[in-house]
Image 1 (cartoon, rainbow, N blue to C red):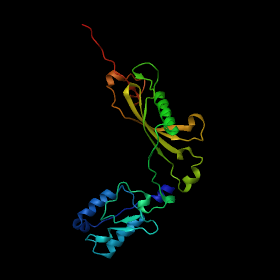
Image 2 (image 1 turned 90 degrees about the vertical axis):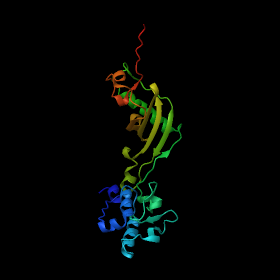
Image 3 (image 1 turned 120 degrees about the horizontal axis):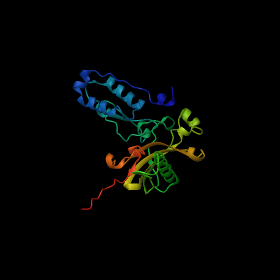
Image 4 (image 1 turned 180 degrees about the vertical axis):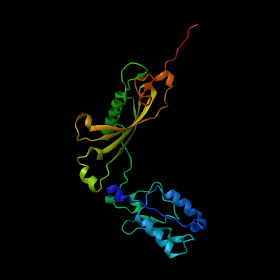
Length: 239
């Protein structure tokens, strides 16, 4: 399998109902921990606690344990007795950098080269969805960049070698900006500085941050509604 399959193996647990009946908090913790960052240190401590004492009772002082060689941040947690933090990272879970697949979004300066490039690429993409320049859907002009974030590519195993040549493994840039007709957009761009021209950045996701305008007064089929920057016309009747 791939590096991601190797570093994120599936784990299934079958818990006796007798244990869940006696420890209702264990069921709540298991549900919460399904989508959290779990390491083999957590699994080891959980199984160790079940074997050491009466599994129908809380493990007490051994609910957590420092991870050797990963102190002071690394800490193993009992999956039945503890809810894993939503903000947990690889350092906290005792996962070495070479095996870490968690790459967070980090804020970038609004005037940085990456932010400006992504915003311009996003505007170009949004305008390319319009069939013509006339009609209710106006050409989008970049207003102000109000948010910018970066995500570096995951550098593990095969990805570490292929990342130098594969555009899909280059950094992601996400920007939020205002535009024509009081619109607000969020665009994610894959930025490859080594690629020339249009290939330097491709839009991988767009999101409308403003409310859609009324369909009957805005949309004229010149562009999908989610790409439409429209100022609804107001009919004034003179008496």
